Image (cartoon, rainbow, N blue to C red; front, top):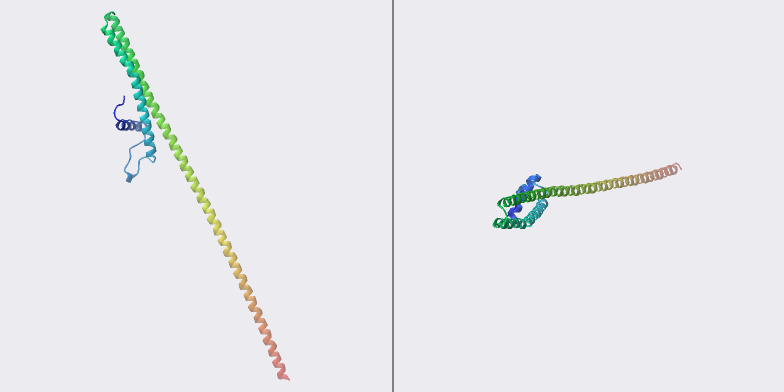
Length: 208
C-alpha cells in the first residue's frame, strides 16, 4: 500500500508508471528542449491517473480494514473463552488464518489488477492523444501546402497577366511606330512631288 504526501507519492508512482510505459517524463533543461515534445500534456495525464489510482487503493484499504478489525475481535473473543476445546480453537484459528491469507491475496491481486489496468489505460490514452496530435499536425501541413499551392497559382496568373500586358504594350508601340513611319513617307513623297512640279514649271518658264 502507498503512503505519504501527494507530491512524493505521486512522483514515485508516476515514475514507476513512466518506466513501465517506456516514456520519459523528466523535464530537461529549457535550453536543451524537452525529451518529450508533448511533456506538459503527458505530465498532466500521468499525474491525474496516478492520483486516481492512489485514491482507489486507499479506498480499498479503508474497506478492507473493518474486516481485519472484526477478525481480530473474533480471535480475541475466542481465545478468551473457555467453553470450546483447545483443538477446536486451533482449528478455528487456522480457518481464520486461511481466510485472512485468502483475503490478502485477493486484495493484492485486486491492487495488481488495478495498477495494470491503470497503466494500460494510460498507454491507450497516450497513444490516442498522440494520434490526435499527429492528425492535427497532418491537417496543418496539408492546409499550409494548399495555401502555398494557391499562392503559387495566383503568382503564376499574375506573371502571365503581366506578360500579356507587356506584349500588348509592345504591339501597340510597334503599331504607332509603323503609323509614324508611314506618315513620314507620305510627307516625303508629297514634298518630292511638289519640288518636281516647281522645277518643271521653272524649266517651262525659261524655255518661253
